[in-house]
Length: 346
Image 1: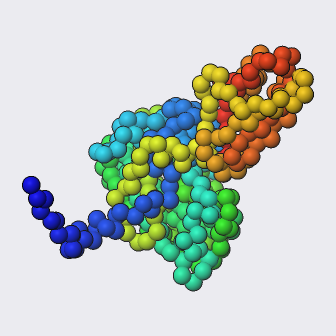
Image 2 (image 1 turned 90 degrees about the vertical axis):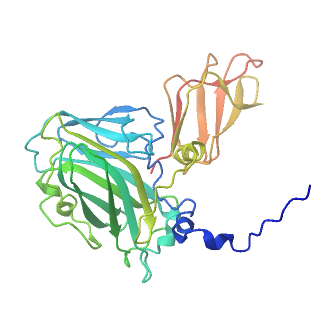
Image 3 (image 1 turned 60 degrees about the vertical axis):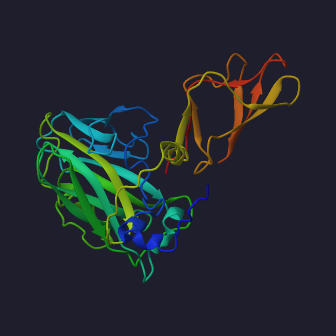
């Protein structure tokens, strides 16, 4: 039986341009925008300078008390959101109080934005948000190395309803971003603050950072009642002036992107690659799951080596860990202990 020939000459012409435009892989600058990866845990009592769900860092000083969790309350098509729940009210924040969530971005990942040149690209932020409170809140794009910032305001129109928000930031012709693995830009979501951070004006164009402008557009106090909640998911930042549909990546891909900055070995008895180095010591080599952003800080809830003496002289790199272990029996095998964390966050 002969197979009929399929003419593909004009097939591309039948695909809507919007579908082609939305088929650009890795257009989302934000990692874990769908809040699906939570390597450090799924519930956190907020304090200053902690990473929570992967890639989301806190700035916190005295603004009531909050619990952050990975929630399954999410808009259609999403599996998770980041939820903030006020657990201790602060109806009248002190002037220096502040609570913000950050997402930091490597400079080498955003060179195509051409920041600091006459052809600097605009970027568009989109996300889904939900709260029992209605009113205005601010979001900022910040260039910390050059001390520059731009912001925008979004409005929560309906209580307890998922709403999609879109904000476009103009390109910045000042302040180039280093083409390396250090912080280039950061996205910051002010949750609330005192007057030190809200008494200025929203920086709707790029300016030298002024703290009083960082939360000037908000008229919501999420700390004024323990009934207050705030959810966010679907965070996407992309080049251009139009928001495309959220870019869903396979979970294994997203997990690998997050592991560049942090991961934990939780399995019992993870072997390294061993080499004898004298009668009472051994060197070991353990490759990381992915190439890490920088030489990681390594911590463990256990001693680091199971029943084999002293774990010392570790020399981390971005690709592998090398260490030396003192032991008493040259025939024994060296194992990494449980709960060893590798942290190379920005």
